[in-house]
Image (cartoon, rainbow, N blue to C red; front, side, top):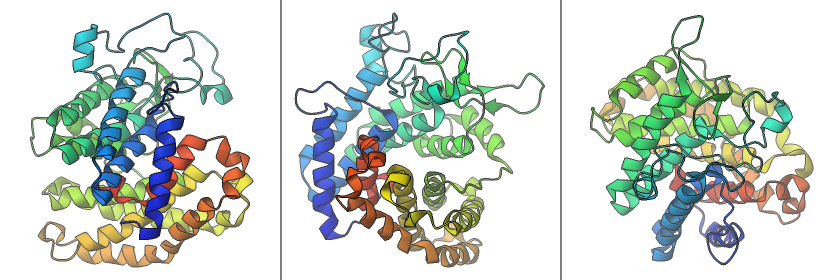
Length: 381
């Protein structure tokens, strides 16, 4: 729950985002999958906090626009239509079957074109961790509206992503995941595996399974094996925030009866504890705005606020019996970092810091992540 004095800021940010990115008004749609996943959750949270139906309409309109922009080929691509290759009617009914583009400014690297690490960041394609965020957003829409079609789209997206991103290494051994795929999911663009991609995919699959063991059963079994025994350590602020949100999501799933996740929240909180110690050692939050990336810090701030929600779920939860003592211990140790969330939010709410080039160069994602950190329950659920 945000502080009451933060609600006007969240309203203003999300209204401006709707106009500036072409969700409302006459502007050309400017869609980016990561940002839009968080934006959908923010609109749902504004509906919950205010009771105003216009925020549900914004969330649903954003989902539709994302599918019709990022679920189709780019305007500058000789290909056209739905990424899935389905005809217009079928593609509209199943908009996620071909995955969803990232929304980067440049077209994807062509087959045979030399790899350029710097340029690749601005090239389009598909990211598994962005797809995981959209799966989560669709599930949140389904839960908020009671419309099962959104969860069905999430399941279809999970199945499509899994087929494309998982592969058997030529040298043998267990399957791995590509980090980035081509727009049509036919070839890898970056073969390395994202550090937390298996974890986020695993939790997203379980979330949309909704108690039906037949849904994504093979995919869940495969990604569970990939997660087993992995080291989740990171000292990146956005990654740390993600770990804390993942820990909350795992606890929520355990409370709902998913006992296969027993022990995972401990592992994630332990990794976050070590990572936060490393991250804060250099006092990165004391630097000027120009040297900092707001969306990464705000991701951390969002995750830190998930700690209180974990603490509220622990008492009198039989599903967490046997884990309570260790979870409480980790929460106590992580408690020293809670105040960083307020520090980060306060810094990026300041108008002069939003004038820095580090803010304006990433205006949409920074603004949406600020709104998420000010009202985190929309994304954290």
